[in-house]
Length: 130
Picture 1 (cartoon, one colour):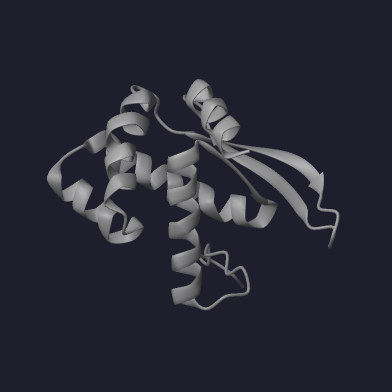
Picture 2 (picture 1 turned 45 degrees about the vertical axis):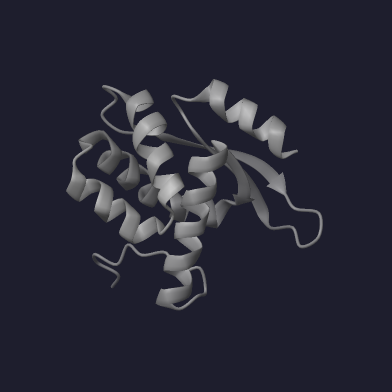
């Protein structure tokens, strides 16, 4: 039985999975919305929401914990200044996953993952990226 076995492995070993999730979280913080596979989006949501919880705490220890996971100073700065303050009094549910359909090449289910409180920033960032 799989009691208390929550980790989605994504067919990767631990170090590769941690790096993948850290990079996806950095991209989400930087751009506001990213397009990825549905499995990666579902694995990223708890990680991203924990980062927002750290940003809402806002103390030095929380900043160091976020920096230890994300490993990018400018991304941590944006997380604490923009994303954490925009989430404000929300008690959870900082991310939204929108299903897109199958990818053309291998029929993998695709999805957008984006912040719920920062629609304006997410749309402006995605226009710059495209």
